[in-house]
Amino acid sequence: MSEQSAGLTVEGLTRRFGGRDVVSDVSLQVAPGQVTCLLGPSGCGKSTTLRMIAGVDRPDAGRVLVDGRVLSDDTVQVPPERRHVGLMFQDFALFPHLTVAENVAFGLSGPKAERIARAEEMLERVRLAGFGPAYPHELSGGEQQRVALARAIAPRPRIMLMDEPFSGLDNRLRDGIRDQTLDILKEEGTSVVLVTHEPEEAMRMADEIALMRDGGIVQTGAPYNVYNAPVDRMAAAFFSDVNVIRGRVQGALTDTPFGAFLAPGVPDGTDVEIVIRPQHLRIDFDRDGRGPNPTPEDGVPARGTVMRARFMGHESLVEFRMDHDGSMLKATVPSVFLPQPGTALWLMIRRGRCFVFPVTG
Ligand SMILES: Nc1ncnc2c1ncn2[C@@H]1O[C@H](COP(=O)(O)OP(=O)(O)OP(=O)(O)O)[C@@H](O)[C@H]1O
Image (cartoon, rainbow, N blue to C red):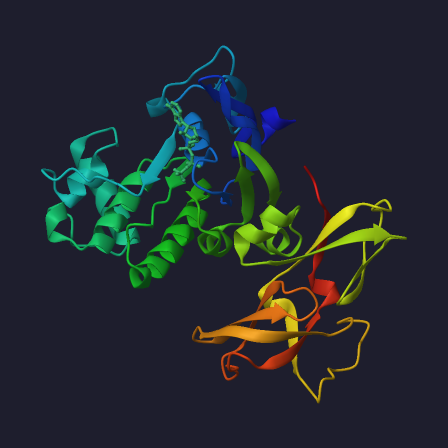
């Protein structure tokens, strides 16, 4: 029973603005110590979902529970300050006129000496021992972020809600602070909901990704599963560039210039899209107008001409115009290989790494 579940439970959360569902029937279960990322493009409803969990916005339908206790439903609406929920946002706004220790102690109750002691303990946790008497403007951006983390976890929240909390930091600081933040939250057994529009951040941080689109969750799963078994073309394309080859099913197969692709369970006559990430195209040399031999794993080769090749550090991104229909395909290859525009090469498609989706709409 969800009433008994430890951690955060969100059931059927819905929010309407101006007659439009901006969040629609969102459900989540986040166990203690688990990090769930709400991932999706701008405007898909991530922040609105977080605001309803925090209690600063009231849902039109649905429930929010923590450790089985109802915080929000049709009749109950526990105010934000009584939810034991920690918040961290990009704009974390420390109080400039309070010292670092006073900032961290701000949300705590009890005698001042106890509050300051807890604040000092938290500052030690985020490796800022000794910074207590300093003022925020004396600290670097990364240090200020760690103070914000110390402040958010000092009251021992059961749930931590984070909205793009690391996007204000430069890349080199970011990785370290992200990992450190997660370690602390996991040690504390806090359930974390993190909002981000960056797939790399979600994959790096999440135990579970809830991929959102148009107010709803389209797919939930471990990063590996969401990346490797996307529910549709858009879900695949959210994580990386993709190539799309169109075809029509006949006898559970779709014939293409790259050979036949299995389309099990898809009715004859259905138009399908074969979706393939650039790293799963294989490239081979042209041998007097002939390519490599077909294989069961990679199908039939098709020839294309290099239009552009870009060096990207550890790999090169090569764009091809295909001989058979003039369509463009992208492939990534190790960066030791940077073919000249105009070079004819043969492309093959890994059968095990492509996705076949019926065309909808
Ligand atoms: N108070 C409001 N009144 C009217 N519309 C709103 C309100 N709050 C949010 N919206 C709309 O709801 C939709 C979802 O907004 P939300 O901020 O939740 O998206 P998001 O996924 O967090 O986007 P971003 O990554 O850009 O912050 C948007 O179209 C937004 O304009």
